[in-house]
Amino acid sequence: MSVRRSLFLHSNLRRLPYDMLRSMLAQVDPATPPHGPDGPVAALERRVASLLGTDEALFFPSGTMAQQVALRIHADRRGRRAFAAHPQCHLEVWEQQGYAVVHGLRFQPVGDRHRLMTLADLAAVAEPLAAVLWELPQRDIGGLLPEWDDLVAQTTATREHGAAIHLDGARLWEAQTYYQRPFAEIAALFDTVYVSFYKGLQGVGGAALAGDAALVAEARVWRRRLGGDVYDAWPLALTALHGLDTLLPRLPAHREHAVAIAAAINADGVARAFPDPPQTPLFHVHLPVGPDAAMRAAALLAAEGAELFGRVRSAPAPDRCSFEVSVGENAMALTPGEVVTLIHELLRRAT
Image 1 (cartoon, rainbow, N blue to C red):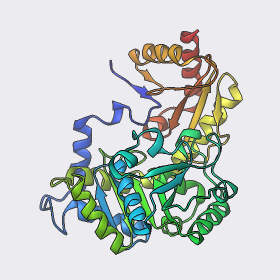
Image 2: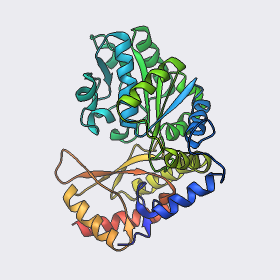
Image 3: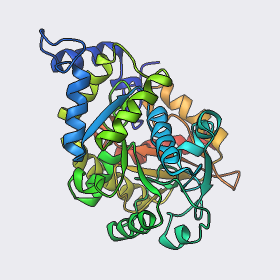
Image 4: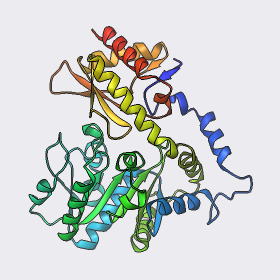
């Protein structure tokens, strides 16, 4: 199967090893050492700390590890084991409760699972918390973001109650296109910030945890304890640096294209894009077919060279499902009209 057109961010279309290795070569000087203060990992850490306006940033092989470490440190410092977040936060939905199994932490879901967390939701939590986590944007409800004033009010109130404030910024790069504020201004609301290098920046993998120098020093110890102190992490760092150089400046255009695609889908009316308009390059498309039929039809399209998504989400109604669109360079090569045509073809084959 050779995919020629794809709406899927993580499609192999632009992730073949040869292409990724070429991007590394474009980023590295022949004399660059693999380790040390002049190596790619150290350069990446300095770059992220500068962008976020923090004392330091520490490279991790995965965001799962980085966020567990941040929450563990906040919990140990406060002598509290509970943290709060949206019911569909990534740690709960996608990471097999590693925060509990590995670190003995307890998750307190806050608010309605289909809506953004609110100040009133947070005020209703009676238990003393080690930390509150915000995922910006909230991926599993369509990529929604709280308005800036709401976010400031929520983080301020949380700090007044003695809890740490942590940002799941896996898509912070994309969220900034909506807030239109410097990354450092957004990061300044939080005690710790995690960012990813393999989503919007399209790196091979890896993440960073940013914060003050004392916290990053503790995080470095935990990284070693958890087996994340990868000796030769420079390939991951090189692709991350390449993404910061080449894709970060393009994310506003990605958001504009997402808005155009969503508008075309909703004007057509066969499927529904949400939110309307998208706040970031991420949004969901709701289909009037069940998940099994959608996946079968998608496989047929992919066999012919057109890829719409990697997976679908089920819905309460068995004859409905949705898929995520995260606009990257793959989607930029498709016009809104072409996306609508592909959705029509998908639905034709699914019914």
